[in-house]
Structures are given as C-alpha cells and as structure tokens.
Length: 184
Image (cartoon, rainbow, N blue to C red; front, side, top):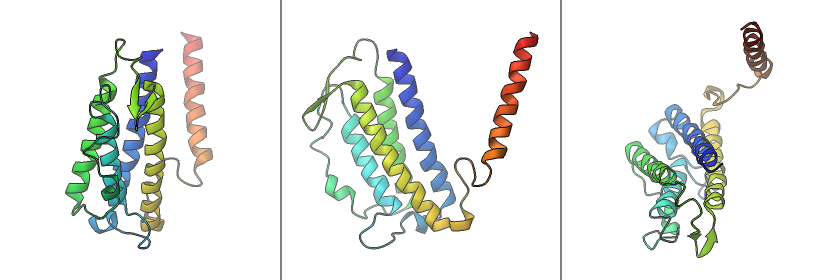
C-alpha cells in the first residue's frame, strides 16, 4: 500500500508538471510575464511562488519544518524573474526538489511525522496538501495560457467538441483487447 501511494502521488505530480511544461511551450517569452492587471499574477510570478514553496517544503522535509528560514514568501509574489531561461531553471529546480523528496520515501521513514508551519502531518497528508496546492496554481497557469492564446491554444486534454471521438477510440481499443483476451 505504501509503495502504491508513493507511485501514485509521483505520477500525479508528474501530470501537473506536464501541464505547465506544455503551457510554457505554447507561449512566447513576453507572454510568460503577461498580467491581466496590476493585481493579478503572471505565469512567471506563479512559477516563482511554486519554486519557493517547493524548495521550502521538500528540502530536508523529514527532519526540518517545511517553512524554512530561507523562504521569503512575500517576495515570491513579486515580478523578479527576468527571462524564460530563469523561469524554466526555477521551475525545474522546484520539481527536482519535490521528486527527490518523493524518491527518498521508503518503508523505514514512511511513518515519520513531518511538519509544515509547526503542524504535524503524515507523509500522505503532506503530499496530498501540496498536490492540491500545486494543482490549484497549475490551473491558474493553464488558464492564463488559454486567455493569452485564445483560438490558437492547443488543448492539453480532450479538445472541445472531441469527447465522443475520444471515447469511441478508447472504448474501441478496449473492445479489441477484450476480444483478444477471450480468444487467447
């Protein structure tokens, strides 16, 4: 069960990272810094926040509180990233820290109580908490990307109007598999 959870949560985080990766691929450098208004966040600001959060939460997470002294959360919401290259470097560094943390979980430490802002969490609670947080921000990133690209947006899931075609293909493949299994 523990290994199933770790495998599952890693897969979910990889999915959300992929949504960001595919959004960034569609945008120009200037579009990564676009803000709807002065009170909204650009994609670069959201990435800066995710980077800070991930480094804080997952660096030495088994032995230190997830709200690190080095973190400056308020600065995460300032427009301080200067280029696509810097944005992608911070993006990758945050995810690398998270995935290293996930890969460090094993039978011996799975039941370790970990702390975030001095509140105890099980490993499952901590990862679920952060999965929800990151999914929230990835939804913002994708939404901003869609707003910017408009009709030029390339869907990251089933394109609008193609659900029947997608389902027909999935169920057709399932029916073929069932026939092959019955005949073997």
